[in-house]
Every structure is written in C-alpha cells, then in structure tokens.
Image (cartoon, rainbow, N blue to C red; front, side):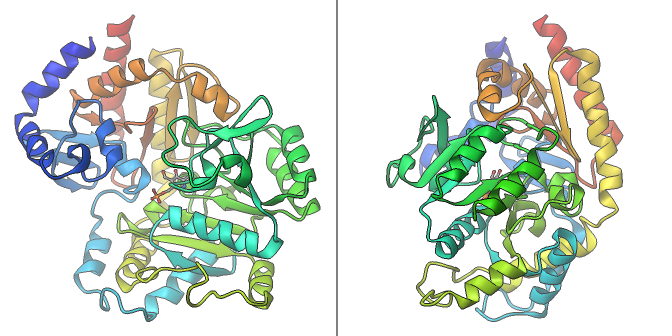
Length: 429
Ligand SMILES: Cc1ncc(COP(=O)(O)O)c(C=O)c1O
C-alpha cells in the first residue's frame, strides 16, 4: 500500500522531484534542514506559496495544512499583520532595543505571569539559556527531564530512563559527554521517581513540558503539577516550563490555563508568526538571584545571549503576532476545531485521541508517559497514514500524528481530514 501511495505521490509531484534532484547537488540530504528528509513522500513537496492554512507546491497542488510548520506557523502562514510589520521594521538588527521589545515583554508577562523576559532566536536557545542560569543559581550539575521528551537540540535532553539508569536516547548524534553526567531522566507522571531524583540534591532544574507533546500528547495526571511544584520547591530545584508547543492550550499556555508557577518559562516557534523568535521568562526571585550572583557575566562572554537575539525584526514580528494574530479570543475559534478533529478521528477509528487546546493527536494505544508513547508508535503505519493524507491534499506533521489549528483553519479543513482519514482506516481494515 505504501508503494502504491509513493507512486501516486511521484506522479502528482514531478516538479517537486526536479527541485529535489537539484537540491541534492548542494544540500545535505537534498533538504535545507535534515528534519525535512522525514516527509513521507520520499522527497518533500517544494513550496510555491504558503498562506493562511494553505500550502501550494510547485506542481500547483494545494494542501490543507494541519502541520503548520510543527507549530512554527500556528498563527497561520504569513499572517497579514506580521507581513505588515516586516515591510516596515525599525531596522533589522542593531544590538540596540526598539520600542517593540518592552511591548512584547509586557505582553508575555501579562499572558504567562512571569515579570521579566529576555529574548533568543529559537526555543532551543531559550532552553539552553535557562539551563545555564539554573546551574549558575544552584551550583548543581544536573537537569531532570522526562524520558522521550524533546526540547530542541539541547544536549541534556536526549536522555531516557532505562531500568532506573539514565542513558542516551538512541540516535543521539555526537553527545559532548555521557548524558548520565548531566541529566537524570524519569518518567512523566511518576511522582515517586521525581521525588527520589530530587532528593539527591544534584538537580539544578526540572525542564518540563506541562504536557508532553513530542511523542504524541501525554497529559499530566491529576495532582502531578502540584506535586512537581511542591517537590521542586522543597528540594531547592528550579522549575523550567517549556511552553513552545503547549501554547496550544490558550493565550498563556498551560501556565495560565492550569495556574502553574514556574521559576523560568521558555517559548519560541509560534510567538513570532514564523519569524525566528524565542523568549525566556524569569520570576522576580530568579531575577533577583541572578543579579546578585557574584562574578556572573551576563553581558559579554558568560554564555548568555547572542548577537542577533532580540533583534528588531523578530521583536516586530512578535509584537504583530501577539498583538494582532494570536490574540486571546483566537482560541475560542481554534479549540473547538481541535475538538472537531478529535471527534472525527474517534468516529472512524478506535485509536487513542488526545487534545491540548488547539492541538490534537491520535496514537495506536493509550500512554501515560513518554516510554509508553514511544512503544505505541508504529513508523510504518504512520508513514502510510501521512502519505495517504498527503496524496489527498492534507498535511499533518511528519512526526507522529499531530494536527494543529490556526486562526485561518476552517471546519471544512478539519472535515477534509476526517474524510481522508476514514478512507485510510477503511483501506487498512
Ligand atoms: C517543546 C519544544 N521545545 C523546544 C523546541 C525547539 O524549538 P526550535 O527547534 O524552534 O528551537 C521544540 C521543537 O520541536 C519543542 O517541541
């Protein structure tokens, strides 16, 4: 069935194939960024235009896009207010602040509740910075993460727990040191393992997505976040909440929706409407401790910051996105669409469907942590489903089975997925 779909893809996308053949002459794997090798067609569709919730390829095929750049385009592709801001930015990069910076800081503080912010270019950078600051403040060596988490290309996070030991995740490319030296991995939703790890006194911070989103969605069990906050406080460990994907839960992510109280908060991707942007929020107490830490160089070569971080262009994009695109009311439109997606999948399959705000996923078995979610994945089946959808004009993420709703997504877009998905399930059964 995969072979038949691959043939169908090749027939429909001859110009994409020509583009790919050319790109193979100069690009690693024939793509600008290695993840793009993962698209199910064997080569990616080459984009002619992406606008709102639609992507059109160079063969003139139009897709309903539920992948949305794996959250980078959760605001919809090329939203008009962002394009407007990009047309007349206050410069592009100067290593000086613009008025947009304080506006964005105030808006992020309003939404997420943390009073101080600094900017990066990606969520990965925000996470790396958070880990440095946490080690600086606590003087402790290790970071606690959940097995099969993903926080960007952050060395400490490529770790899993195996029989109580922390080991490198399979496929980890060139780890700088043995991950067991830097990281303790525990299972999500396991309060006992969390408590035991924190009791060692070695953990500078917990780096946590409030709900896991990178092995499909795994929601926290009742009481888990209360325990996480209480235990981290009790053991002097900082809590870093990564809202990069869980921003789907609402205008202030899960932090606002579930009244979480992180010490540091990281975010990227969607907040710039697709323009490289990242941000790191700090509690008042963390800021106070950072500023009083003797000998810490935050302004030059201490390892915090980047030449282009906080540049005028990305701040203009963040202001336009937060001020005029992903406004508070948008989730009233997008959350019901994710519900509609989830209902559609449930109506035609018995697979497990999970939703987090405007994001929904299906997987082939229930999971309460990353290891169970990993065990429930089925790459061949996923590839077939992705390819089948791709051949019928629907893009979902090439990783697991995620669909995301933008302000521009319509009920008809979701119904198109349901129709195609029903056809795929019936072809399988
Ligand atoms: C939860 C989470 N945090 C951080 C990142 C890193 O984002 P970026 O690759 O844009 O730096 C990702 C990327 O998928 C993510 O899923």
